[in-house]
Length: 442
Image (cartoon, rainbow, N blue to C red; front, top):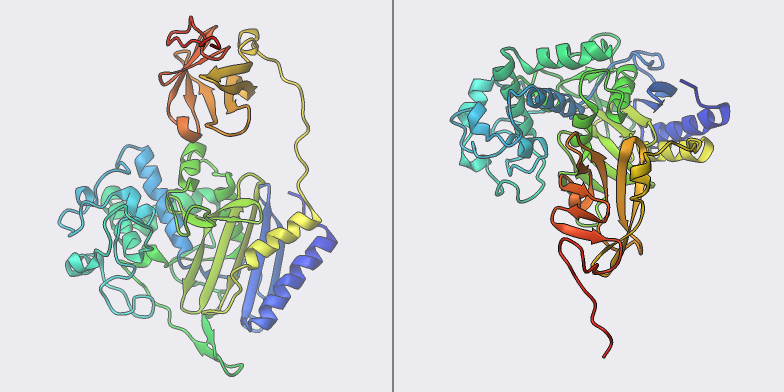
């Protein structure tokens, strides 16, 4: 791990200092993670009369949800559940048992945002059995799968699913399966010293208003955890791809895939499986924001650049929504990542002979080689369906992305069979398996 340069560190600290002063935040920490390690840490304000450190605890809020989601994905990978399982299979008797596990993870199950209790973020919680007894049809707000509708209740229910499948509570599962393997020993369910106190800042005076803290019980999986900048930096590295064996790379990639978007076709924000997603500054980010009374936090990771950013603050509201992205922009301006050096690679002669021009009817496509015997098929003019393919043991290739994701490509010397679509070396090749032809000009 290489720390940022002095000029970069100064620019990052200045942005943090401006935020803390102008937004009147009691204390604010931020960090940059690069290549799996902490590259920069900054702090402003005071906690207990001193500047906060990398080991000062703040409440994570909804970042908790992402860790709960990882346990759910581990259960899926173990075969204990399927993402298409209806909730009723694991929590019999719920009034919306048809909602799937995947829909709960992606906030597309149509459930109400908040549980049928008193203001759960500010009052002591209920045990799971009492919460389940209160659920009725009134907690169903939209048809499952219709739209994104953020639901804290949904993650309370996922926590109970974990408890029933693991035989112990969601918290123990998160501790044993995520926090301990990743060395996140500063992350707990209740605050431990040194920790920041949660405050709201009076809107018309520089006065602090203490905020409550309690055990949310059944709703704890939606936002209970406390953590430190040091631990949250490790979590940013995890989301960026350094899983430490906790989750397979393929499963983490699946969590980062958009399951739904919040703002239409040209989306800038969306949700995967337990991870928030954003497109900002030319980056595709995955992570989560967090908010509980007296605390705000955010963690984003850019897997393509192996870069992460986070901030933690003890204020109820007021932080700029662009702070984290602006810190990443400072990094891009001062210390842009250099591309990896290009190096030639050996190629299988038989595959090399397949490269070049192919035609789907009149449309021209190029077939190129990728590392590890992969193939890339793309339209020559850039308009059309493009996909990458990886080799399979039976001699076929499996589509990775685009229209042909999950579809099978079969390669022959004179044609390509892509899920029944035939590609040939010349347009409408007459002797192709599905022949075409040309009509002489009359």
